[in-house]
Length: 300
Image (spheres, rainbow, N blue to C red):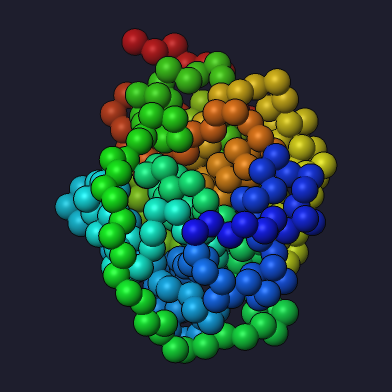
């Protein structure tokens, strides 16, 4: 059953305070009935070096993606993964991971595509938990398989496809990549090999707001006033209710999607998970280079 107590009163200022839990709250509630902790990392071997006690591993690549297509698993596949992990439909899920919760936010977004109601992020992720000297274990928890129902994936409100981007010109769009990727100096983030698209630059009219601006030094999220300063004022999102975010493959933009939807409370936020890997190689897709967003393209 979902956790009945409020997750963390300290997050009351956010649009959806239940979307986040603090490390203090999680430490106090580990082992509670109906609470499932999941670790989702970019480094798929990190879990076995030590993880939060009782946490189960969900692999963003092998568990959530279809092995043959550039798409996510279907309803049968999701139900199979949830059942194997011992997750029930009404469980409270707390996700955390490395890379400032990139892949934890990505997993949360996929959970929401399947309509799982109570899914939350651990504020600050794995980095904050370990920096506070909290307990890690190498013991893999024993779980009993569940009977998770088959729910078909709903892409209509949370996910954007390339055709959606073409019809979105003139409405707010956020490029969450690094400034070097946005300007066209690089194809991927600094520290990663240059690969994934045939052209560099950004989608015309997209504002550059790197995902990391939403975080404090300890990788926790900034308070609501700080986020509003960045997004509502700085990116001119105030008064808008339909925003698309993108990055290179959708993981960093899942992080920003979470901020815009759950912490600020913008009504409709979609993650374009095809992102620059698709758009940068798409025939006839317009691009812009440099530090400015560029003008609305004339499409033919």
